[in-house]
Length: 140
Image (cartoon, rainbow, N blue to C red):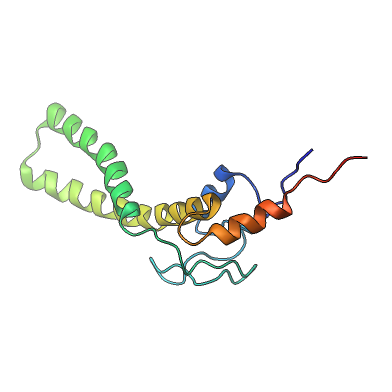
């Protein structure tokens, strides 16, 4: 029987750790040194992150998430109350901006964690190491 250690975990656990801006390996160390700058290595367990390739995918996802949340709300308010356009801008632009900024770092963390868990973009050696340590022992 194969059991996973806390360091190996499931994909969902790794992505959740990334979303909470923690190391996907140990769940303890901080994943970000600055707002969108991923640390080179985890300060707690030493896992290497310098080779991640999140690129433009996190902003794309944030645009999709925020857009799918805000647009129906804007349409509902417009259909129900028909406020002036200046009032619409006054309400929805700050909500959109704040929502996007609040989601950007957690989504990037989740993407980096997903890459780590799947062994993508330089994380191959990390995945091989996790798989070797997860090999089932022969039951006697």
